[in-house]
Image (cartoon, rainbow, N blue to C red; front, side):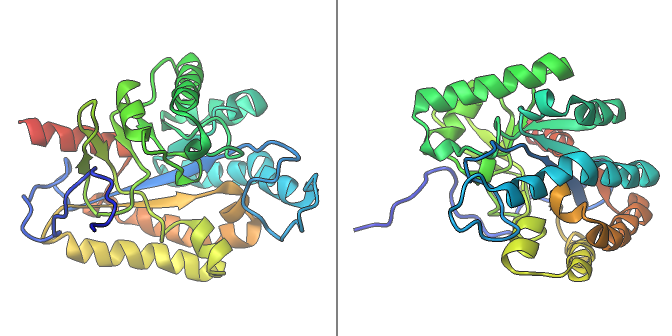
Length: 293
C-alpha cells in the first residue's frame, strides 16, 4: 500500500537544474514578507504570548496581537523607509476596515499586496470548497477595491490549505502561492486548472516558529536572518536561489526585538546589488518569463 501523495509536484533534486541569473545579474533573490493580521475578539484562534487556559474573551493575547497594528507596524515602517527596503504586505483583508491608514502607508511606498485570507481567526482547511471559493473571492474583491488591482499571490491563514486550494486559487486568477516551503527555487504546482507557481516562503526565517515556538531570542533571530542570507549567497554562486524573511509586527515590532531586527535590515540594505531585494510577485514574473522565452 503506497503512501498518500499530494500530486502537486514530483521529486527533483536541487542539483542539475537549469541555471540563470536574476534581473540584476545576481544569484540570490530576497524578499521581506510582512504579515498584517487582524483577529476576531473572543474566538480564541491566534498566536499566543501566554496560554489562555481556555478562558474567553482572551484579552491578553488579543491585545498583544493588536499592538502590532497600532504600534509595531509603524516602528517597522520607519525602518523600511529609512533603509529604502521593498516589502511584500501579506494582508488579512479585514485590515482594510480595521486600520486602513496602515495600508495607505504601504500603498504610498508602492509595495506589493499579497492575499492572506480575511482574518487569521479562520482556517481555509476547515471550509467547504464553496466556502473557500467565497473566501478567496471576498479577499480578492477587497484588495482590488483599495489597491485598484488584483492580488497575484496568496498565503493561506495558518498555511491552512484544503485539498482544493491550488485549484481554487488558479481559477481565481492567482499566479503564485506562498504556502509551500519545500524548495529554494520557484517550482510549479500542478492543478486541474493549470500550473500554479510556488514561491519559496520561509518557515525557519519566520518569527512565529522561531521566536514563539522555539523560543529564539531577538539577537539570535537577527543572526539567523544574516546567516541565512550569507550562506545562500555562497550557494547562489552555483545556481539561482530565493529566500524570504517572514515578519509579524506584534512580534518583531516589540521595541527590544526591533533593536536587533534593525541590525539585520541594515545588513540587507548594505548588500546592494549582491542580492536582488524585491517582491515575490517580481520573482514570479521573472521566473515565468525565462520559462517561456
